[in-house]
Every structure is written in structure tokens, then in C-alpha cells.
Image 1: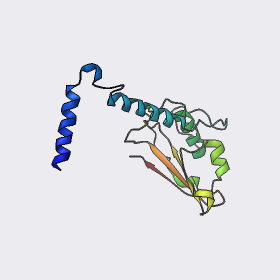
Image 2: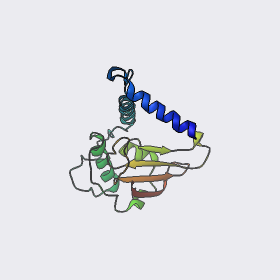
Image 3: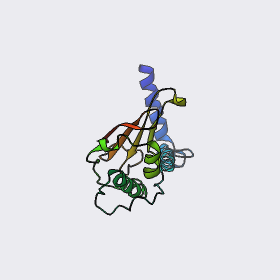
Image 4: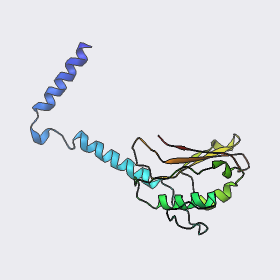
Length: 168
């Protein structure tokens, strides 16, 4: 224990004694961390699903659509077209149970790819889960407050359970 404390003291003292030109070596630790975080943000943005190309749902105009499938479609198209981290203020669909019974192909054609997939490897287990984020998360940031719509599918690709909760 004493050796570790003495070693830390020597290291701190040695780094303070270096001339300014040599204090950081080739790059300061802060600069290295900044580059790592910048690359992680780029990687995160590259993985964001693209907006759906369907023409079935109208662009979001500030009002909820009567059909919940088309309402979520319009909101996802809008949110996915925004720069990452843009603040949005959407609510969970009023009644998420209306999505029960929908087919995976219909969901994908309207909403596009999910933000997150929880699928068993090689479909060895029954069912899978998709999660759609109706918001614009800030990359590498804690927090949330935007709706996450989860759909649980059976092996045939039919929604068996749907729920929506605000991310934390």
C-alpha cells in the first residue's frame, strides 16, 4: 500500500517537472479521450436506423394521426430525420395494445428497422423483441425522457405484447 502511494506521488511529481513542450508527449490524455469519444459518437450515429421510405404515412405535422400505426410511422420518420440529440417532446402511444396482432413485415414496412433488436441467436428460442425509440437520443449521454416502444413477437412474427415506457 505504501509503495503504491509513493509510486503515485513520484509519478505526479515527475509529470509536473517536465517542460511544457514535453508535458503531454505526443498527445495529452484529454485530447486522446476527446478523439475516442468523437469516434464513438460517429460510430453511434452510423448505426442509427434510416427513416422509413414508405409513402403510406404523412409527414409529421404536429398532430397525432388517427391510426396508431401511421402515427408512430410519421413520428419515427420525423425523429430519424433530425440531427442526433435534437430535443423532442413525444408521448407514448395512448393505447399500445393496438399493435398486438400486427405482422412483423407490416411493422418493418411502415416504421423501418428498429433501433434495437433482441433476437435469440439463430432463432433457437421462440420469439424476439424490437424496440423503437420515438425521440432523438444524445449519443453517449445518460438520461432520456423519450418514449421507447417495445414489441414482443412470437416465432411467426406476430406482435404478442406491446408496451411503451419513457427511457431513463
